[in-house]
Image 1 (cartoon, helix red, strand yellow):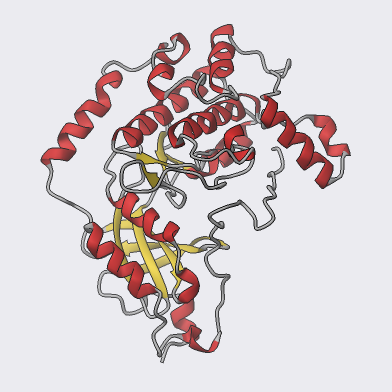
Image 2: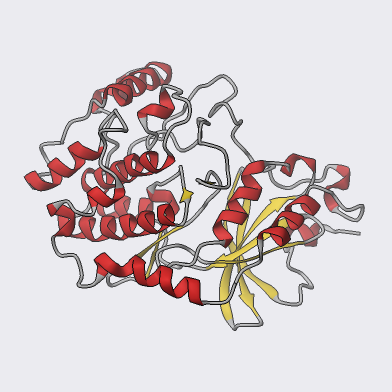
Length: 358
């Protein structure tokens, strides 16, 4: 019979992994740092409560899409497995925190540093799109930093991802408000997930530089939450943003942002066009323009490292069944269940909630 200890330490007795400490917790589940006895390395393991409430196409897509990726700027998927209480997803552990924390601590980045991070984000997006995956949730919080002197960017969390060839055309109002493209806010059907990712990357760059969201204003704080929400949404739909005067940036950087934060996705720069912009190309390390060509060539030559699609889908399917020896069998859950967004809206009533500025 599962015990309280099993819930605090779902890896108790596991032959490969041993819990080190808790990392974070959210409505989706929680993440622990663990020691991998097989490799001698540390891994991050995400735990989602098993049972019927886990039944979600997003969970399967997250694992299937993530398991197909192998890139230095993407957190590496290790494996998915089951415990009596949880579906567990083991991933590369990145110890530098996320970019939200980094930018907040610095109260905005100098243009040179912001460009270095943005170049890495765009390289990761170029790889994702070339292998057929769109994230639909690009944001500072989903961008981890590896190292301290000149941190490397690693994108994580593919809970809202889709494969452009294997999945249906993106149409759901998913993502994180504040980073959400106008075509999602206006509920435009069959939008281009790649262009949504570009928009979100542009918001990331803006926040890195100015330490605030592009469609918020200081005067919004005097409004009620509902009024602020509606005001910000209208600015997103109109593409109404300004460059703060107390954070001077180059004209080239302003030009790039003005070509990314474009309401009409057909007029927005693509990833490839962003990578040809003069501001992006400045200080670009030698050989980085061909980096993904080399990564894709090496990936094709390597044997399959992660679980195949059939294995992943079976694990997710089995996770929907709650074993009789689970501590959750009698409703003794210690965490909220995985919080999936409904397919047709960010909330059941179609509302969005914006995170506060820094």
